[in-house]
Image: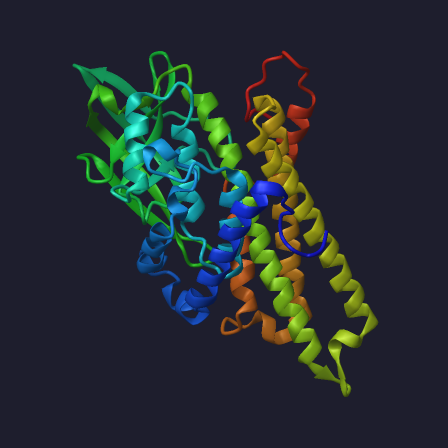
Length: 393
């Protein structure tokens, strides 16, 4: 590989390349790490004006089908945008609102209301976030206790969801819950009676929300994915989002590495740039290998998902391999880049630390390296035609 991000060819190169160039130009204009530092531990945790401009550029509707007002593109294009935003630390909350909920609503079993909601998302009438996780340390979307019980012509929804990414920007939530027939996914407006949001702060100073639902009354039309299809649709959407989150991770790692190389060329010790020291050159070479390994598995993953010719188990294995490799690579690169900066790298005022903090959050979101390695091993033992719960390890 030549050091550029995901390799592209043909028509895909034209579209994804144009989106990447657009995102790179946007990042060059919008990046302000001093403002990022000031936003830390301050709601909403992202620049709302920047997020609105992402809609004007069409990025928040990249995955929405054309007939619903979107661009109708694939994961390669979404990943190209996410990686450039990751380099500039502008990614929050792009993947959580423009990738994860949209892919979920595109399942074959989704109700007509799912298409209408995608159209509203493409028009920026709503911003969606998915509330699915309940158990710490579990990435199984079926490990939930939230309940939706019939009440007249509709439902009463109760339960608690944690670690809801993108909730600060969301106007509406997609919420998974158990019904009499299995796991369903419901549309819940943020301002619905019985909805309560609380937050805590993550390592990078962005908020992580918990969503509490106390007998939230919902019409029957709010059930967007019916029982029997919800768990599978959730798994597929989480896999797709994990791939695009991996692209953002690689953008974070790439920027940290480039920043560190520039520092090694200019930082002088013993009357020589420290980049001339062989021990530091070896360490930088090791980090370059990690970066290229991450880029290679990311390329494999976006190609597999956009080809659409693999089983859910195969895609799950590919997504887990991608997320594990990119999480580990980004964490190693950002941590060792701080070491290569020496004492200044550990200060809050120096920008390299912001990249490590962002990598810590993204590496944990949707499953860390250890979780996905276990899942990859479990899925690798599945033979064609065998049934396997997609997130059971």
